[in-house]
Length: 240
Picture 1: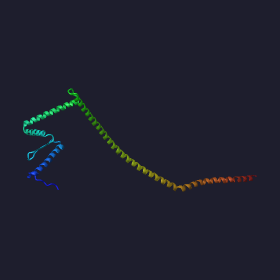
Picture 2: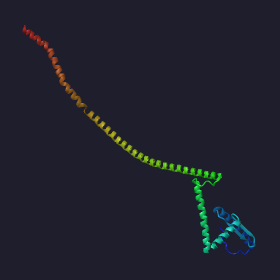
Picture 3: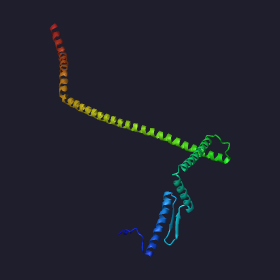
Picture 4: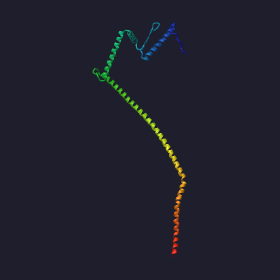
């Protein structure tokens, strides 16, 4: 079970009041320390107990926190005065001009101008800074070149992938057509073979019919040649 809610009012019992003060004070200082570390804040806490004892905490130093607090309080009070506001704006303008002048001088030094007033150490620091800048520029340039080439390669890869898909489709279509043509060729071969088997008897009879007259013609002369001597003898006898 969770703790019950405590009424926010003065604790009458002195012992309980002192125990609660000690616990809450430690928790408050702990939270202030965590806030300064986590959020990079400048924190200052001052606590007086009911007995007049002082407890304080400062992330940097209590003196710097108090001085900063006083300055900001004075500035906040002076903002209501137009003259003080003008002076504040003038100080801001002067500070911005100094920063601008410093940046312009630094820019001219980086471009190789107004180097007469610099010492050897300053020149060495400037050289190191320029070398670091050049390294950064070269690295950025190489990265941009590589990124551009990678993009081009990705585009070419996509195009080649699409072409590969189209070629695979054409190859599959050619294979289907080739399969259909082979099927037709096999069917035509089967039909021709069947026709050849069905016409074999008629061809044999035709061959025999063609050869029949030639056999008869050859047989007739042979009979004549056998009877020729007999006729010749008969003729010879009649002549005598």
